[in-house]
Image: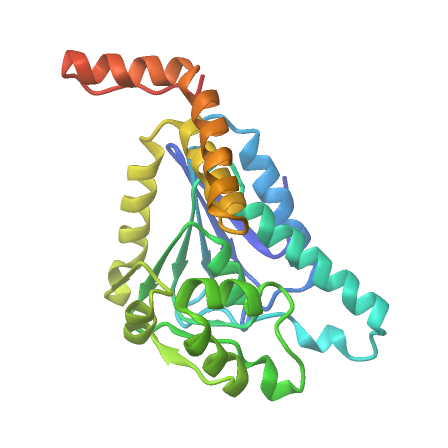
Length: 259
């Protein structure tokens, strides 16, 4: 499948999806649709067990939405673009395969909103993070006001959202916004190592865990435990579960097949 704004590469059981829209990899509606199509393509590819999302170039992950397209857009069309991004990013949270954000540079606005929807965020030391929409007289619309407080707490999130200021990778790590910070030259190596580690896990259990976390966080503990129990029962009945338990008893490495 051909893409205008993406580069999709497959390596063994991994896929690397690179946002390639110079100069700043801004997310246009077309780019969002291409990301969705690429993820659907990878969903159907049983050989792919993990996905890495990164940005093209040395200094830019994703600068945000392509706000030039907002000029002259009426509220109805604007809402359509917002719903497109919200739907895509929410689908990443429940995507059946682990998704890793390899943040190679500025991660701003819609770029940060995309990264926050991923399962694991690994940042280069030079990366910078922020939700600068306030400086344009607008606000985040692809989950920034919802996922950021959930990740780093209300107070810190409000400061970033209301000032539009950027923070360094080291501060993002301290806040819990990213999982790991590595030297710039080691970013993709670290991302691939993480992807390979996740690719070795049972795919059906991965999908069930992602669903349970995404659905359970927004409900009561009681309801969340019910969601967890339902997915445990579903995973427990799989061939992978039998293989995993058998391998543990037999003291050997399991071979999960996603069945």
